[in-house]
Image (tube, rainbow, N blue to C red):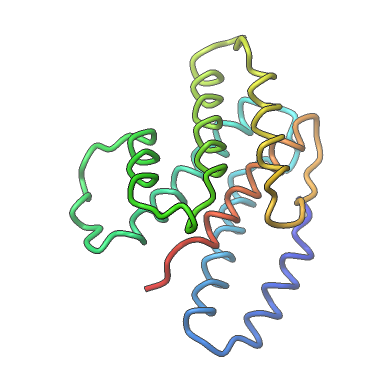
Length: 173
């Protein structure tokens, strides 16, 4: 993966950061970048691995996003809330101008893809859903594409974009 531009921007931002809130934003994005580098394949040739790894990253970031928007996040500690319930809960508690509706739709498609590829050796409708996810994210892309090589580079790049978007939306406390 080519993170050179992102590295340079984050380093410059860190050097010139004046406020604690912005320092936290930079730190969160750096941590997200490190997790992406660690868990996303450098070569995106296996859609199953890209989808399952990407979904796990999104799920973790989304849980942090929801927790960052709760007054008492400890009240959900230890509760068995599945990903789809968490997405519905977050949609219900957010004003529409805070989070883009397309983001929730993209997250639901990614969850469907994860289920398709985790539970089927040859998933029906997989390529169609992959293309639907990529198109939705690309139409709403919030940052430059991260260069990833491989047959499923567009899919991996769309997942990385969603990770970075969620990272940027985390409330700073």
